[in-house]
Amino acid sequence: MKNPDKPVPFTPVTEAANRYRVVGFISSVNGFEQLLPDVGWEVAFAGRSNAGKSSALNLLTDQRQLARVSKTPGRTQMINFFRVEADRYLVDLPGYGYAQVPEAMRRHWGALLERYLRERQALRGLLLLMDIRHPLTPLDQRMLDCCIARELPVHILLTKADKLSRGAAQSTLQQVRKALRTAYPQATLQLFSATTRQGVEAAHAQMDAWLGY
Image (cartoon, rainbow, N blue to C red; front, side, top):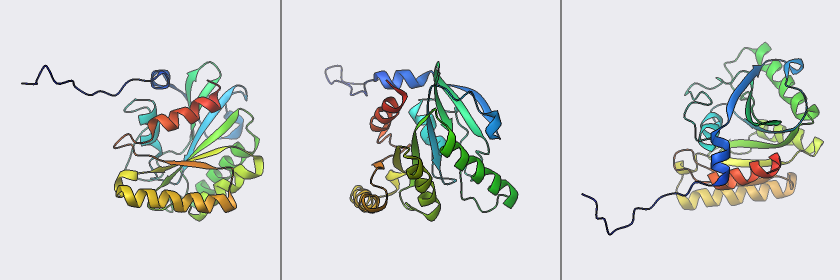
């Protein structure tokens, strides 16, 4: 039996957490011409296959199955739109770098991603997810190059931070920050874990800023 005189700790629900809990799926598209009208505000999620993109999206919206989570890389094969409210959307982009995808499909995804990042005016910022154990791969750097060329804000989530000790995670954070300072000074970053919920409030704050809240 619990001691009634001992307070039970709890995590307060923030305004942002409540806001993203009502996010709902709108549509999936596989071509640039199928995108929603280019108005309002969008925050996109991008990253290598199996970087934890779907898990992060589910955690940030406090919904267990908003995005399909799979141990098989390459499951997100279309651009998925989720509505926060009128003219405000979260966008789940296809994961990149999965070698077992047919070459023609990989080229199609790459061209669609680059065009979306280059031309989409509603896109206000990109959350770029990187497995903390394998950050800044050549494909991640190519994604950053696309964003820098358009002057698109980028915030990096170093996912699966729970896989490293606290000291090792902080060390990797500083190493990546140092590398970004030279090549991509506009990019910001943080630690993130879908398992321990580390970094949720900081990620919400960045999403809120881009979506105009």
